[in-house]
Length: 160
Image (cartoon, rainbow, N blue to C red; front, side):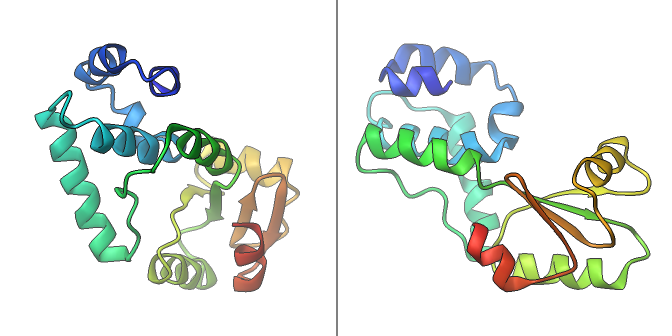
């Protein structure tokens, strides 16, 4: 999909979009770029499916105060942003019983910070990430190659 955008290949973009592969829209690094490219090229290709996706995203944006559907001004800006976004994914490792984890999720949502959450006790992915990043408590945050146990808004802001 990103190659279609990079090469400004609207036909390839259209063909991939028509497959309705949900993974394209659930990966944080791709979603903004797909929506932006589509909005910039809407006059060449109209997609009821993408329009529905964008409307759902706008509802999310209104709830959490983040707008990812603003189109980029150029394809270079789009590609640069795609590369930067990939490295800025926030992963939250938490548990169901952890009060600080609930506070951390509330903080992230209140500040419009998107995150991927794994249960560090029940999920195999969560367990392996805790081990890999030497998590010492809950919640544990992972951004890029850095990790921190406990909620520190300044630590999160510095890395995003």
